[in-house]
Image (cartoon, rainbow, N blue to C red; front, side, top):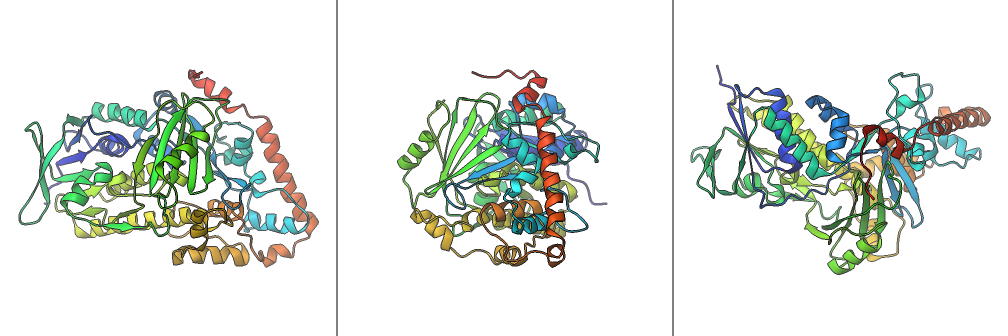
Length: 502
């Protein structure tokens, strides 16, 4: 019998470390496996990931977390999607909603009917047919109705929250389930001379921590996978040239909106994420086209409220490690790679990295086939998210700055070229290999950034225009009526007795 893993060590805290610790401790009994997490309060965390996508609900439910308790503990608000401003052209704005558009009919995608109705004079944007988008625009929110016949059953949502509070919340969760936390800095990493496997971590205070399997959650340093095991980095700067972010919190100035806002700027973009107590803001840009001082000025001039701190600068290179699992070590979070948070995927990629390991949970022999499958899956996840983010930059008509001229003319991956061609020729959008972003997400960005099909489904095209117009109009009216009956986002949050700042 091959023995099971007995000792797991996690290096680093933050969202990545404590999500890993919480997930493992929810499934493994302390008597079977010891889980130790090493972190230092002296080493700060990046902690700017405050916006999520609906998959976070699955992770919290897996842990058995009570939603109301989570919302109170993390200063969370609800999120129905992301609004994009000035991306396709200056003056454009659209919402990438979490719900789909309309209802598919007779086996055909709703957007095909919407395209047909446009030729018959329908001037309403595709946003008007998404319940989440309409609710977001009106500042409304309610939980999904469990009755599948209800229009409210189409609601999908996520959260905005304070990432540092989420890490603290998961720390409490994990420690209650037997995870041991050690405060300290790592001085040396010991490897087995025969295999190169990591065997022990030596701390500055003289402690030694042995383990059979290690998770590198040390952030951009990638102390174990990058520095110790020497795994190189796949650089995607050619496609995603932004390489710096500045982040700053600001005070609230109005009702808490239930969506993230991403506004394109001359050399990047600015985010706005409302939590209960403050608004998270950041400016992501390329230093080849803009200085740090210019970027700080853009950030501060674009705040809705008073800045509550000085901007914090974060350097990064988009891409990922050449392998996510090598020998007896897996990198999670920033140690594994970085994709800018344009579509709020940072927390998701942490979640997916942990979940995929759990689904492949190895014995002490660490079979190579498990490692290879993990690396294949995570590489595919990163590449699919990469393509979706590149789409926002490449599908632009902006020519007002050198940065946008570069983005408009840069080469793009063949996988993305293929998706764009399919949609441009006939409005076709398909989901490949269970990728994160589904057809409605691609349709929202394609249409939102003016990639308009030259033709649409010929079967739908043969339907009487008046009938199609009546069908899509009835859906639009149903959305408006449903949203009219919803409470405001502010009023709905009051159910949780959440104190409102300012």
